[in-house]
Structures are given as C-alpha cells and as structure tokens.
Length: 351
Ligand SMILES: *Cc1c(COP(=O)(O)O)cnc(C)c1O
Image (tube, rainbow, N blue to C red; front, side, top):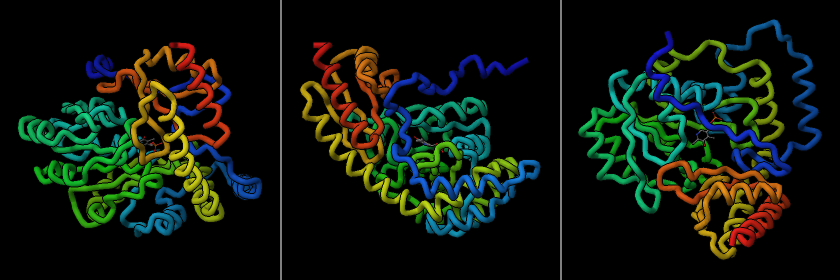
C-alpha cells in the first residue's frame, strides 16, 4: 500500500497553460546566439548514449568551480536544486525532527519534508515579507526544529530577508539552508559562512540563468558536510547531455550569460517603475528576476484578463499573505512592453 503521508500531500503546481508570451517560470528570456547553439549541438552529436555519465561530474565541477569561485570539493551537484532539497530533508536532522518553513515561499521545502514524513513547522512572514523572528524562535524552541530553509531572495516575494534574523534562528542549533537560486540577480550571499560552518549550506542553480532545461543545482558547503551528504546522492544524477551542455554554456557562453543577467536587472528596474505607474497596481521591490504585484481585483480574474492580452503570469494568490497577488517574470524588453499593455488593458476592463 502507498503511505498514508500521501493523503496530505499536494503535487507541486506547475504552470502549463500556453500563451504567446510566457512570463510565469522565471526562466532567462534570452536565446543563446547561433554560434553558441552550434557549439552545444556539435558537442552533443559526438556523445555515445550507451555509456553512463561521469558520476563525479569532474569536468563540470571544474568549470563550476571557476564560475562560482568555490573549490570542487565544496560542491555537490543535484538534478536541479529540487533534488538537493529532497536530500537535505532526508538527512539534515532526524526523521522525527521538524522542518521550519517561512511562508509564503518556494513550495518544495514543505513538500520534501512531508514526503520524508517530517513535521513541517510553518510560520508566516511579517508585513514587509521579512522573517518574523519572535514567531520563528518560538516555533524552534517549542517544536524540536532541526532544519530550516530560507530562499534568499525569496520566491515569490522577491525580497532578501534580514541576515541577522537567519543567523539568530541558526544559532538555536538549526541546520540552515540558504537557497540562492536568484543570487545572480541579487548579488547577496551566505557562501562565506557555508564554506566555514557545519550548520549552513548554500544552494545555487543554473535554472534561472539560462539552463533550466539542464536541471543542474549546486550545494555549497564545508568539505566535511559535502562528503557526508554525498553518501545519499544517486550515482548518475546528472545526465550526460546536461553535463556536456552546461560545460559549453559556462565556458563559451559565459559572456552571453553575464550580459543577459545585466539586461534582466535593467529591465526589472524599468518594469517595476512602469508597473507602479499604473493606477491600482502595487509593486513590491524585487532583488530577483521576477516581480510580485497586487491589485484590489480578484487575482484569478486579473490573471485571465492578462492572458487575454497574450501574456501568461503566475497566480500566487493561493499562498498565505498573498491575496490579490500575481508574479511576473522579467522578460525581453518587447515581452515586458506587451505585458505592460496587457496589464493596463486588464485593469481598465475590470474597472
Ligand atoms: C526556481 C527555484 C529553484 C530552482 O530549482 P531547480 O530545481 O534548480 O530548477 C530553487 N529555489 C527557488 C526558491 C526557486 O525559485
């Protein structure tokens, strides 16, 4: 029989609706230049699919080491950060010990903990979407919490939590995961602490910088932490084409990636400004590649109206504290223009 745990579990919600402009998954909107695409495909052509991939991802780790500024022995790779989150929920702390999740946030933290049968201790963020420290400390002290996840910046709110609040929770003896999936858009990191301490790890991902299809996540931690966690990693978790494509993208494609990130940050600032200029739209400040916004209209109605204008965004209003909120990913300039037009039109039609 399947576990009773499944009864309380909801599958991760993905957005599959089709639309001319998709600004719903926080992907990099720019396509690699032709020359880069050619390099990638020519490397793929010479692969032999009958062979297992390198279980240690030696070449990819060397390239990542250069890209992230971390020695290879401080990294563990996962099939997306999602896989690393599963591993952490399995072995950071004991199965009976609670996992602290501050909501609204990335749903995988809670889902993975539930799958492992661990109690999920959920606290709400405060009005500024920062960590509510007293309420977290109370939960930690009452609930035998041994693991906590913080998305930094947070998805879907887009802000960075106060560093010292994270540190104070960790100082209560809680193993702390800092999920820096949007690091390249914020520039803020806990990497130094992760390299030195045995109670802190950082997650990075290639998904938000042009390689979501490759499914590569990176855990960064002290050598001793990484070598223990490596014991639970599935041996061939990064496929052969992913290893090869990521190496090409991070070497020959490095300028493309870095220029794309800069363009997204510029567009984020412009888009925020222009959205804030639309009457009835409240825009929350973002340090990521997406923007959370709120109106007084019903979110699913507004979502539908924006879709009629050809643009798909994410309805996040089902999450706590986010009534009336939608999230839009920063796209190419022309996609953002189309979104602004669709939002404008939607606001007028609902009036
Ligand atoms: C998108 C995202 C990730 C990335 O997950 P992958 O499995 O690496 O694609 C991780 N954490 C957060 C908070 C995200 O928004």
